[in-house]
Image 1 (cartoon, rainbow, N blue to C red):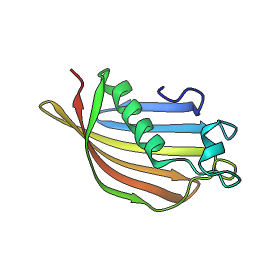
Image 2 (image 1 turned 180 degrees about the vertical axis):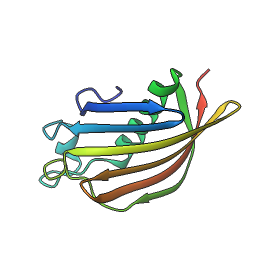
Image 3 (image 1 turned 120 degrees about the vertical axis):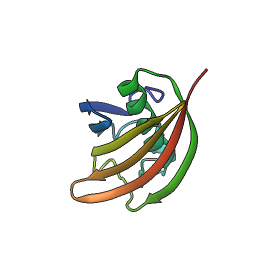
Length: 122
């Protein structure tokens, strides 16, 4: 975990190129003091980092983000109101690349849709 203490992994399931994970955000984490004071929002870069970490865990590989496309933030994730976040990832390995299609949601709200390509870190 790159950002220690930001979240707790509540559940994680990887089967045949599909990951489902559930995390509980630490609403008292210091990252929320600066993003934004009095109105905490989970930074998008942190969500992308979690997607990378879940993909690395599934494949037992160290990865680098090569391309992020179709990045659509559809709702703000406020850890004080929505601290349980669900991730659904579909992985496809093509040579040295791992293509990921991902959705992130809380309750019945879609927060993020993302397509990304990761490469093996040498």
